[in-house]
Amino acid sequence: MKRPFKKNKQDNPAFKSPDGDLIQINRGGNKMQFIRDLCRNEKITHVQFRMLVPLVDMSNEGTHEDSELWGKAWMKVETLAKESGCSERAVQNNMPLLEAAGIVKVRRDLTDDGRPKGGRSNVNEYWLPGWNKFGAVDESENGERGAPSGKSERVQPAPETVQSAPETVQPAPEKGAPAAHDSADAPFSKTPPKDTPQAAAASGERGPVGSLDDDRQSKPATEDAKIEPWPDDINVMVDKFLSYYPKGGDRTKIAQALEEIRREGKTEFRDILRGASNYKRENASTDPQWIKNPENFLRNRLWTGFQHDNRRRPEMAMAI
Image 1 (cartoon, one colour):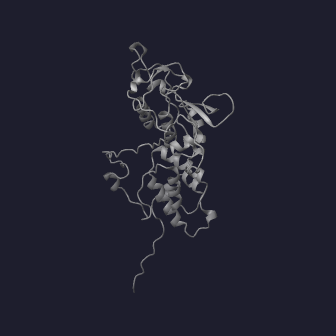
Image 2: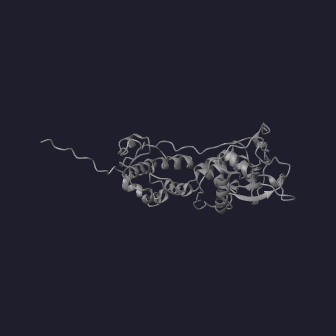
Image 3: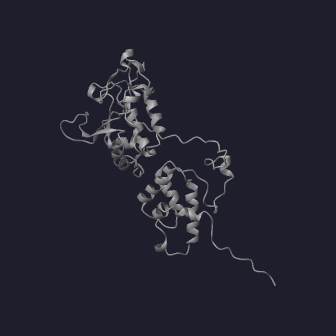
């Protein structure tokens, strides 16, 4: 079902937020500002960003017949998973982390009309305190929106770093499954933009993957460890690593270890692949029980000792 068309986004009413601040929400206006701010927030993971985007987009703009729902988004867990491109498990694991950081407030298991009366369902109600900043209205200016930076002191402080729970692939919805009654009227899918290439540091430090400076750096010791940036999808990241490592392991622990390394911002993904590839080659004849578990290989930073192929090369025999 399509969203109703509005001729003027400024027709949206200003109203009191659940925190008592006067706000106004406009599609394509401060919604986009909110999303762009989340995109620049280094304290949330890409999975959490993808979860927050549909919550911002589906925040009611003051058009619902029940004013208690203005400014809020409400949807079922499976709908939020579908809209964000995550699995239901990823949503359930990451939402408490976002709540603890003060980024979102959730009221769970409401009735289908968004009210906590009667039976129970999986519909949850979401409120983003960030609207107190991005929807701020200057009451002294007859309802004109104020600049986000000039809003009241009630704006939430920058949250502590939010730890990420591993993401799993979203399964395809079953055919004929009943549609959820949510604040979402149409599918919405967003992925965080990739970092734009930057110039290499003049000091001689290594530049980003793919830059001219990067091309002058040492190449992988083995041909099969190709130069690659960090994948956006955690499952792709794990699959790629395991394709180079000599044995499998716990995907959840591997994902957590890789995500921790990625967020540190000090290691290129290709260096890990190179180390895993050389470790595999050097232990080709080793019994698997003596091979390091992949998560320990990552957590102990063992790939740093396998950046070169240290296998002994056969010496050329001198003809007599």
